[in-house]
Image (cartoon, rainbow, N blue to C red):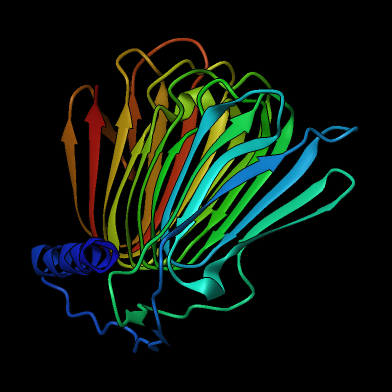
Amino acid sequence: MYRKSILAVILVLALVTMACSINVTLPEISVNNLKTGPTQTEDINVALPNSSPASLKFNFGAGKLNLSPGADNALVSGTATYNVTELKPQISTNGSNVVLQTGKMELNGIPNFSGDFKNEWDLKLGDFPIDLTINAGAYQGRYDFGGLLLQSLQVADGAADVEMNFSQPNKVKMSTLRYETGASNVKLNDLANANFSSMVFKSGAGDYSLDFSGSLQRDGSVEITSGVSHVTIIVPEGMPAQVSFTGGISNVNTAGNWQQSGSAYNHPGSGSGLTIGVEMGAGSLDLETR
């Protein structure tokens, strides 16, 4: 159930807090009371625009959002299943600008539903140049962006449980990958395949894993800003990387070929490399080799 997944996020935050020996006051949560009804499933199909790139935006409140490649001759295809009428999906298009959203209502914090709430989008994206934006609230996200043509990617969410994968190299250069999240549990995998030139990751309290495995086709810069959290950075064997950090990091743990040089940690390798800056209010940073 949805509430169980969000409660799991809160449990992770509590464990992170205990591990870091830091007291955290979680923000107050506003609660929405919504009535659930019969489950409905709608087909979603958005045609390819006449010009590229497409500006594709998802405004998703609460529930589960699954995105993957594979739309056949469409920009977006799949289904939306829900049992709250106020969350009926809406689609608006204006030329190459497309917005998909969960109704017109706003959800703040963890909703309180009278029944077994369901709001799940299972969607596939097409083989077309896309500037992709995802704005979400308290939700579970499962993303595979492998083999797409993402020119930029921006994600902003709240209390989230997210796993994002780039299972195959992005087919075009990505100018910027930006991810901003609140109190969450987020795993970003095979980030080298995203083919970004710059990446920004900003977060609140939580547990975060950034795995830069994959094929790094050019040098990339990464900026990580996090609150009271546990952050893990993974770099594959043979990829050059330098990590410098500021802030109140309680400890830095290394596993693999990381070598400390002053306030920086270097990972040896050849070819294209990563320059990573980390600023943390408090918590722990793990540097790993895979």
